[in-house]
Image (cartoon, rainbow, N blue to C red):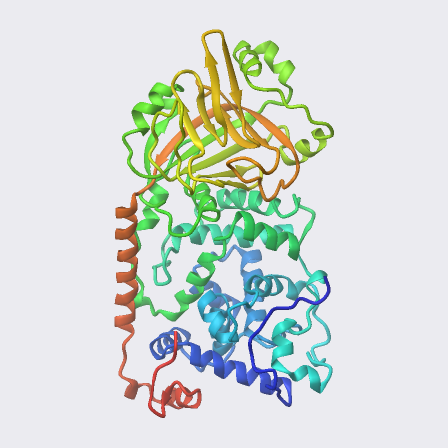
Length: 553
C-alpha cells in the first residue's frame, strides 16, 4: 500500500521555510476554528497560558479517567500528543499545550476537521489510527526534521501523505485497542452530549463488562487474538462496516473540554444503566449495539417487553407481550452453539425433529473456519433491530428497511437488510424468520426455507440457525465473515424483546439535548473587555478585532 494518502483541497503553492512555520500556521488556524466563548471557557479550565504544557494527570482528571487506568491514560495521552503536533506527526515530540489540545479537539470532530484541513474528503479514520499507533512504532531521533527537502515543506504534500507516514508499517497491540474501545463504549453510555457532567458519575463501575464487549469488536479486526497487533486495513474495514459509530463519543468527550464546570448539565439518558437490566441485556451490550445501528435511531427509553425466562418460551407469550408496542424493538437471542447435529439429536428429540424440517446444508472445508470464528465454549449473542411494530404474517412479511442483525458475541458482525420487509412471525408452526421465505406447512409436512443470509427460530423458541451463504437474499452478507459460507445452529437459553422509544420520544430527547447545549452556550457568553491579556492573543489569531465577531464553529 505504501504511504497513506488523502485527497486534500488546499492551495498547492502554500509552502513554508521550516517546520516551525508550518506548526505556527496550523496553531493559528486552530484558534480560528474555536469560538471566542469556547476559547475563554477552555482557558478558564486550563488556568494558565495556552502555550504551557498539559500533563497526563491533568488530561485524565478533566476527562474523569480513574487513577488506576494506567494503560488507558498513557495510551490516550499519546494519542492526543500526536494530534497536537498536526500536521507534522511523524516525530511527535512536542509536549501537549493548550493550543495543541485545541488542535486535538478539532481533529476528533468531523465537521471541525473538514474546515480545519479545508477538505471534505480528508481521511479522518486514517489520521486517528496514526495517532493511536505512532508513539509506539516509528519514533525516531527527535533532532531529525520531519521533512527532508524544501519541496516537502509544501502543506498539500504533508497533508495528503500524513507527513510521509507509511501506514503499512503501523499497528496497535490488541490489548491497547481493547482498552481504547472499552473507553469509547463507556462514553457511549455516559457522554451522549458534549456538555454533560462526568464528575462523580460511576462511569467505570462496570469496566470489566465494557472490556468484554470491546474484545468482541476488536476480535472482528481480522479475527485478532490477545497476542496480535491490529493493522490499519483490518481496523478501517471493521470500523466502517460493523461499528461505524464507535468514534462518535470521542468528539463529544473532547469538546467537553470547551465547557467550564458550571456550564455542564446532568443528562437523564445515563439512567439507562439502571433501567436496562436482565440476564442478557445491559448497558455494555446496548453501547455495543449503538456502534452498529444507523445514527439517530430511536433506541433510547428502552422498555422491557418480553423475557422468555419469565414469561415462557412460546409464540403466544411473545405475541401477548410484544405486539402492543407500536415502535421499534430489539430482539435479543442468547445461546450456545450446537457442535454436533447428530450427537445432540440423539439426546434431544425436539432438535431431531427440527433437523428434519430444516434443509440440510452441505458444505466442504468449513469446519476449521467455524471453529475459529465460533469457539466451542463461547456464547452467541444476537440482537435484531426491528424498526416496524410486530405483527402476525403467515403469508407476507414485515420489518421495515432498517432491519439489522447485530452479532454481539463471540465477535461483532452485522447483517443489514437489502429491502423493506424481511421478517415473518408465523403462528401456524413456522416460528420467526429473518431473511427467509415463508416455510411450507401442511398437515403432514413442515419445511423451512432459509435465505442465503438468514436467521431462523423454531416455533418453540428453543432453536435458532444463523446462515451466511453470500449475496442474493433479503439480507446482505456479513462484512467480517465475508464470503465464508457457514451455518451455526444454536440452543437458545434466553430470548428477550426490548421496546425502543418511538419517534416522539426520540424527538423529545434530541430537543432536550439541543436545549441543554444552547443553555451552555448562553452561559458561555462573556464580556470581551474582561478578557485582558487573552484579547491580544485573540486579535493575533484574527478571532476578534478588525470587525471580527468571533471564530467559526
